[in-house]
Length: 325
Ligand code: UT7
Image 1 (cartoon, protein in one colour):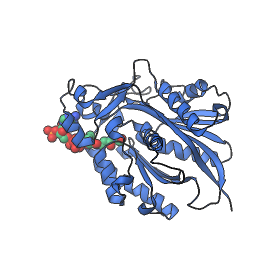
Image 2 (cartoon, protein in one colour):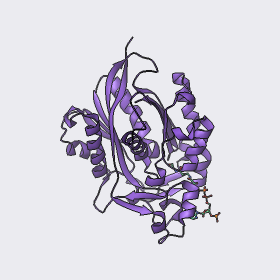
Image 3 (tube, protein in one colour):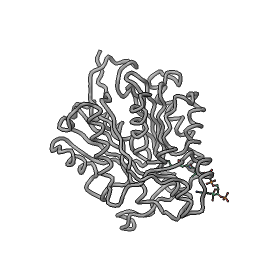
Image 4 (cartoon, rainbow, N blue to C red):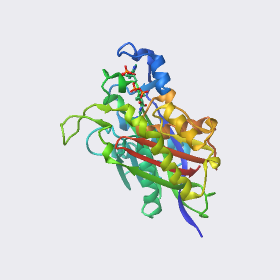
């Protein structure tokens, strides 16, 4: 029996040119390269130029993904863009990307689940493609967190960066086994009791301002590994797979200690873990597609590989996805 799967045709990414090192940050807030590296694994991050918007980053990543997939923009009928830093409150940043690509058919919308945004977007796109309403989609994670950071708060401003990544997905019939190409399973979770642990202190309805990111980092850290490994266990149970079957673990890049702790608890070998947090910082919804594009570009990820994705962040929201490249 055939089974519809959302198959990855290609991926791409974009990072703003400006690199901000830990040493440079230490000139403006009370911090050190040593503290940041030891607590987070971050060495540098990219920062968008003045006037460079989330949609600009997203458009670069989308174009790179289309080239990598060898498909024309006109063949895309769905764009879902995960971001917490849209160009404007509305319209959706996704429609700017749609217009930038010259697409006038299909649908484009934003999805907001903070750092879990890309896994959420992937899951929503998978469902929409399999519903038969759409054939070929761009799933984008794009952020300019530099715009919502309090640059005087050393507990948060050292952690985040800007960037974008994108995947092209197409619905295809597959045999219906775990050897299929495409998204095999996705699992989404949230628990709003934790909404004040990581939030932005502004918004259209509350303050009529954009606000700044606030985080009780220690509390986020405390819950992260258990939530991540729990939702990955759901993915393993749903597919009858285990850590031993994974070719590449591509986690959300928030903190190297969380990534290492999760991989260790799951029994995934360190050499199967894709790490970009050292060079990108935490780019929220963009971190997973940025890491995927990195590992595809240097030929670590190859067709047929089993890839495990996970993310956890504000809300709290968290999720996992298992796909065969
Ligand atoms: O994308 C998902 C969302 N985010 C996360 O996943 C982040 C989760 N949390 C974390 O990654 C970690 O909690 C942090 C990296 C944010 C902080 O690491 P920590 O080991 O939990 O440190 P802490 O918050 O317990 O702070 C330890 C000390 C404090 O000083 P005292 O109270 O011990 O004197 C902080 O004030 O480090 C101090 N501190 C800093 N020192 C130098 C906090 N930020 C800095 C800094 N530089 N940038």
